[in-house]
Image (cartoon, rainbow, N blue to C red; front, side, top):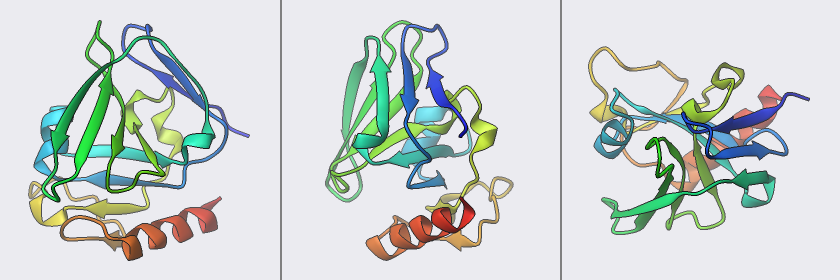
Length: 150
């Protein structure tokens, strides 16, 4: 089995997953662009029971999303790396920043969301693409695709 370990830029925070994520996606929403300082965010979605270890100090920032639900981000207070976040709309899930993993290339991207907000040169061309926010049907499709890929 691969090792799903990661952490922040300065090494103050480290984490490890027990197993593969439920699904992965890239998100082109403006909040992800601001959070990453890039064209999109790369998200690794897990069941909280899949987190084997999460150690180190974090600071949180909470924002209200377009849906009216909160998103609580955890980042390193020393180097500012965004590590994970909790989306009120999917309370039984936890999302990790794909770029915070030691080997982000080990993950396949299963879906693309907020594709209508993608920069013209930043579309990934995923088979599963949603113009705006994901719904339960789209999330389920990503989970099915992730199971087939394992």
